[in-house]
Image (cartoon, rainbow, N blue to C red):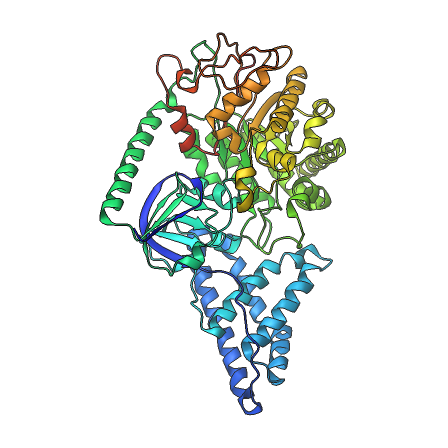
Length: 597
């Protein structure tokens, strides 16, 4: 073994293959002054680079269209049109005529344009910043002589390990699962967009490697272990054999787990637990529907937007939602409205913000952009004709936001009625509890919504003031912090008292130990009553527990041990390896605890 790089496990699985190194960042450009007699040749060099970049983008667009579809690949048409912009060319050529080398002239102009676009009054102009960044990188790479490559350059069947600093929308749309078998990034944590995407695509992934792009040259043989968070560079034959043996064992384990898809999830004391799936992409729904899931606990709709230059229209959204709803054949499908912002940005991104997670995102953006929001609401109302659709609002912190959303939902219904388009009335409207403010005001929301879903990724982040995407703070992202558990318990208490279904979404939902630890915390109330909790993709179960746990997770302040049974003994008639189940479905299920312990 040459060396092993350790990061954060993001998506389970083991893959052996060559490293495809992608350094996608604006390079440093030294200032270079050219003599007067070199100006004509420098102008030609710049124009030739632009033509080469346009040809390159056209090829990337065509291959991305074949992989992801023409609508998603349209991002590259926008970038081609930017390179053809005469104002841009005139400004660059003006600097060249002032004796500045082409790469520095282009670098100066692009920095100016990106800054101007980022602060533009028009949201559409602000969304073009990411496209400007992409052409900034691409043209400088040509002018400076850096490698000009993309994920789509990897031939099908290569089974390469993509190593990059982070996975941006323009890179995401190019991913070809027939060529890329694993992902490794310098940045990110288990709850970052790249980790969620990797799990959705079924690609092993390691994030938070910090400097892998600097330590690797590309082309090395490597083993990526998404379960342990390790990237082993140039392993020996013996080491490869060990990893392959582990991979074969994991495949056998997964085959065994598939046999449990139809097993009744009943605890030893007779309580049934309902499991629901997380769906990030409509294409995942058939597999999820046949894997034992009893509905969808969370469908993330922002993946219809990420990596695109335009928002999807009503018809496209309707088709996507309908596909998921019909796949589950009448079982509940909870669809979250656009949670755009933070680490989930459309092509070009949003205006630059010092802290986007506290900025203009989710329900805030949707309410401000009401026309855009109503397009989604109309599509959801139409999809409601095909099954049990439930609408969920993200990042709500005030009851006024719920009321405003409900008013827009009524307006969307009226617009459909005016067009004589059939739709389902009175879809259940719920909210995600993702901030301490929302948790503490749960009693206010309970009077006007149909259900709660506790978004633990953001709830932990906002409660502990820990950026969940910051590699340096990964160890401080602790879902079992007492403050988090108290907020969860308070929300569940309020929801239960109001007769609402309460779900738990997020990374916390995929960890069995956290499920039972949370149950412990809930049992440690004065009444001794545990509450219902759902996790991403699971549903809730109700029931009574009895007897003390053999391995106590929590202790009541009154000295009474929690009464939840160990994970391994939780299923009647057979012992189900829930630890392996959760690792296989990590981040893709919601788990619901018994009503009482």
